[in-house]
Length: 269
Image (cartoon, rainbow, N blue to C red; front, side, top):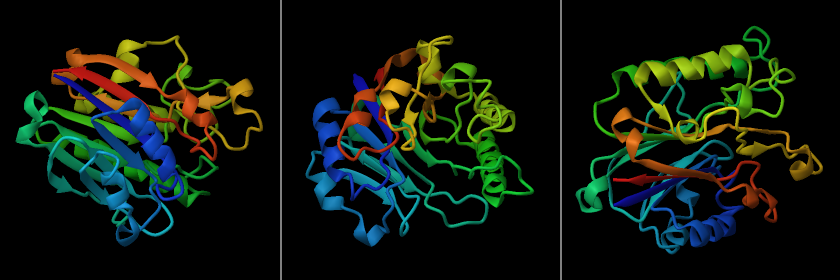
């Protein structure tokens, strides 16, 4: 059985719902995980998304920012939302593929949106950066006690952990998303819990991989100053089923795009 899972920071699901439809029509993933949906639950466009051929949808949102959702062709069970740092931010949602999903049944899918962290990489001067590090510490603790079983962790983790995950390692060492304190935390929480970074599992350094290009760049494609902020990890029992990971770079050129692009993993179960 082939299982495809995509992740995309959509930067407002209502504003870019036509782009969601376009991507789903084009890529046809079995599951699409969204971050930064930016709408409360009572305004989430559930019927429209289900009308795109994804009847099974779970979501958690709040007004104006954050928000996560999982859209699936396959049945989902056991929806769960976790809170971090004693805040009711909509930064996580998970579900398990149901018995009708065949060989994929029982796989848990976790969708995360890690705080961006602001502009100043100093916990004393920037509360947003302090919050980001605290969130990552709690995520690390959760990873150590996560229930056993096959799982896929996806999302905008807002960290480009490796040297070749950014356009210039030297120039970005003091820029939030690539500072040593962030990259070491992310790699530690991934490694300690045994997650496998699917992109780097198949496409190791020194290949450059980016999933985000700033809106501030007047010509993002020519400048190509990207970062790999979006990730798909799997538990070790799924590592050998990973057949491909693709980055839909072309979607960054669509009209009124997100600054992130979709990433899709293909598993052969």
